[in-house]
Image (cartoon, rainbow, N blue to C red; front, side):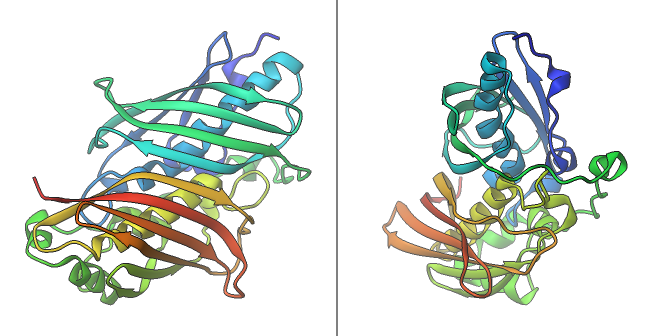
Length: 307
């Protein structure tokens, strides 16, 4: 079946983040997003959390589009699992492009694979996503509401690298929790508030925001990637010494329940399950106040000296 890019659009979080999608004649997919200081973490760096929404499209759309090209069917699906393996560092600015294709699909599940590269062609991430067909249907929002995208607030500041280089990581995260150090633009965009920090453990919370909603009224899976990676990074920061840094190498998320938008506060917790001199492993959960688990994530993080 011949397909056109115009037949596929991104959801509200995708439009909010400036994500674009193009479909080739062979049903492969190109996903684009520009990054910049408005998506920095507390260190002034672009991370996977900066492009969480992008990952939802790049890890979910290719197989769905391939299914449509072959069968003409477009059942509603959501991600059930996504894995991101990181390579070269993300650029501070510029465009990222993900080239993705279907690895497998049947009537109930699908697998997509996408390589993400910067403007110089360097591989920054490899994404694999599994999606499942669900019975839920897109919400009837009306044309005007479905296209509405809230404006971004003025980006919050981040810390100067020279200041962070002189502080132990736990002091940095404690400073963020008390407000003596800035949490960074991306955390501000998410509304992420650190509520407790100790060595190897960080707890945080946030309330779902209007821009986070996908077409079925839940927090988009990519936004959940941003939440999980952001709090994992802060937990990793607590393990760093003076003049040390960290870098998430890979993270995998299992989606168990879908938080509603609007909805109750989401509580986040990330804890080191193994912490060596060069590599640490973390388990991260996103839960409701009653203990209902939305997401379980596992990540490996590199601990290194600042360049």
